[in-house]
Length: 268
Image (cartoon, rainbow, N blue to C red; front, top):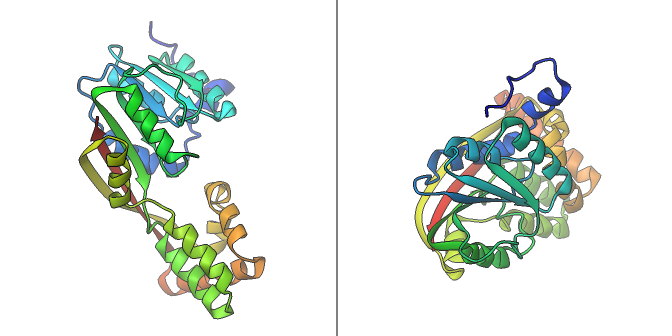
C-alpha cells in the first residue's frame, strides 16, 4: 500500500524531508549514478546513518529487492526507521559494527557504503566482513573522498604553520591530510580482502564560501572538520589561517575548496 500523501503542515513529515548533509549527498550521488543494480535482490548499506542512501536505494530498486542498513549510531537509526516507515520503503536498519556484521555468510548480492571507508574503526576487518556476507559474484560499491580534498585550505594551513615555525603542528597536519584514501590504496585494500576491482569513477566537485567566517561557522564544517583542525594547531594558528583565507577571498572573490571523490566497485 502506498504511504499517505506528504503533509506540508505535519511537523513529523517536514522533519524527515531535508536533513541530509551536502557532504553525504555529493558522494552519494556519485554512488547512485554508477552502482550496479541489475540482479540485486538482497542489499546492505553499511554505515547507513540516518537512512541515506539506504532509503533512496530501496525506493529505486523497487519491491523485488530488500535493502538492509547497519550503523553503530543509535540516534541516527531512529531517523532511518522513521523514514522507512513513513515512505513505506522495502528496507530495515539495525545497529552494529562493520567489523562484526550480524548477518550470515553469503547473505547479500550487493553491499554499498557511502563515505564509510574513511570512518571505519577497523577498515581491514570491515572489508573482510563485507567479503564474508557477500555471495560469490556479489558486488561491493564504495564512495569516498580522496587525498587532496580541500587542498586549497590545507595549503594555506601549511603556509601559516610554516611561517610560525611550528614544526610539530606541521607534522600533525601532514599526517591528517595523508590518512585519506587514494584510488590505489583502496584498490590494494580491496584486493587484500579478496575482491577484484571492476570499475572506478572519479569526480571533483567544488565547495565555495564567501569568506573564512562563513567557512568556519558552516554547520557541517563544525561537525566534521573543525574539531580536527582545533586539535592540529592553536587558536592563534587558526586565526592566521582564517586571515590567509580571507586574503584569498578578497583577491579572488570567493574561497574555493576542491573535493575529489571516487566510486569504486568490486566483485567477490
